[in-house]
Length: 363
Image 1 (spheres, one colour):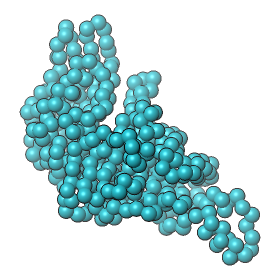
Image 2 (image 1 turned 90 degrees about the vertical axis):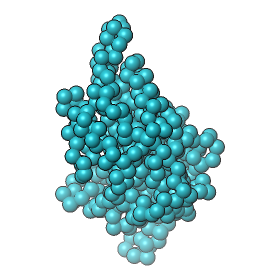
Image 3 (image 1 turned 90 degrees about the horizontal axis):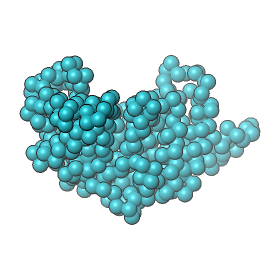
Image 4 (image 1 turned 30 degrees about the horizontal axis):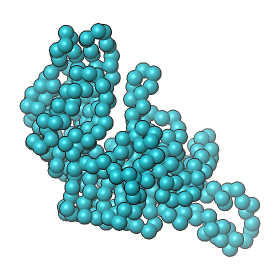
């Protein structure tokens, strides 16, 4: 997977405590205030992902997804999210650290799903190294980002959550009607405290980088559950997908309004998402999975293919959503029922298998 980085123009530095303090003519006083409040002067936001973190050979990569234990930093971080209905999982690990992935799906009145994702990276000593709270899909404001970040960070760093709320709320107030400089980039806020450095903007959300812990080699494994894109593309073509790989990673199936997209590291599939219909009439499935995948889900390894397929078929029979771990694999199914009458069922399912690498798009 290619690293995604972003440079942003900063129309003005957002330093909350200084903005509320009377400015004197003494330069030394101003410098002292900046040092005490921890306002940063970075030229640009943190890159996504940080430079070089995936440019390494395999380091005891383990791509079997695991539940998060209730104790330790991982348990404390995710406990507020899980209590609010999020699904959280340890997506992968290696010799240096482990990546956590959390997601919640909210259905609106039209049954459209708005998902929110949060990612964490911990070192082998169970310390938080890095966290990302991306913006919520289709959200007009990032209130959900504030709620998620404040609740999780407060669990391990006292007062960090309150500071996050204040900084982001002040930033939103300052820039809600301020369009100066936006033609050249995205307004950006940065601050620091005793625990971490924080970067926030509307495009990337909030990125948190701890000050006393680091991981040089971030985990990237997916061999447990996924094969390569090149080995699966012929089967996708046989199923009616328009798929030109390489370089295309997004395939469409016009006749069924279907899609198939992947995140990759090189040719290796890291996560896959696809949409497929279900039609139950007189107790029988009239839209078979083989219509889109005539040879089965060949982008999955043989070790997980059958149990994952069975889990998908269960949701297709019942028109129900699912979020969990199946045979050591992250499986997310968002089901939208478009009709239900007696024993008949028509539904469309958006399915995700595997979690993408931390700090990479899409989330």
